[in-house]
Amino acid sequence: MRQVDEEVQIGPGHLPGILAIPVVARGLVVFAHGGGSSRFSPRNATVAQALQESGLGTLLFDLLTERESSAVGNVFDIPLLASRLLEALAWVAGNDRISSLPIGFFGASTGAAAAIRAAADRPDRVAALVSRGGRPDLAADRLAEVRAPTLLIVGERDREVLRWNREAAEMLTCEKRVAIVPKATHLFEESGALQAVADLAGQWFRDHLTHGGRMP
Image 1: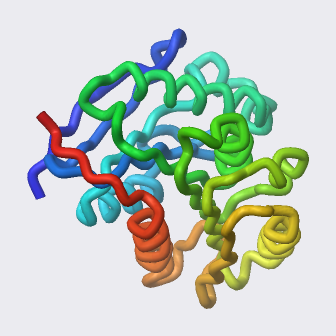
Image 2: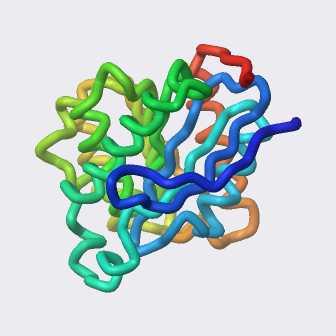
């Protein structure tokens, strides 16, 4: 499917990002990396490509500046990471080509907690949320405020994270599901595991991002 790819800069900090939009897009998925990863995260890039092939636009961008990322504590500064997702929403709203598209968040690790917090802040704008091996427990105080349908994807062998996700799901009051990828560990490095994540996420976003928009 032909699409428009471009390098962009997000927010006051000019955070670098990669925007990929199919000519006919049914929605836009904004990625929230975790664990100090960047827009070049190979796992998120794999999922993003699969989403693009299914007709969804993607935005992968660095949630931290180069200087900020050198401080390990910032990886766990959930309010800071969430504020960058809110900046991304504002950037999308100011871009006429994509401002009308419904938005989903895809968060990994600590990025999932940031996505939950930002989704709670903007229930009017975030239409769906997917977490991959995420830490929703780090946003426990905001879980009950999330209105976007939420899918929590966890590896079967990622036992502690699975427990945290099940506990978080109990706190969510929106439409929710915990999806367990058989035999997968935290990074979903096992054969077929990351494809399973992409398939689950793609189906969730297609089910909940229903608007179609043609790119000029």
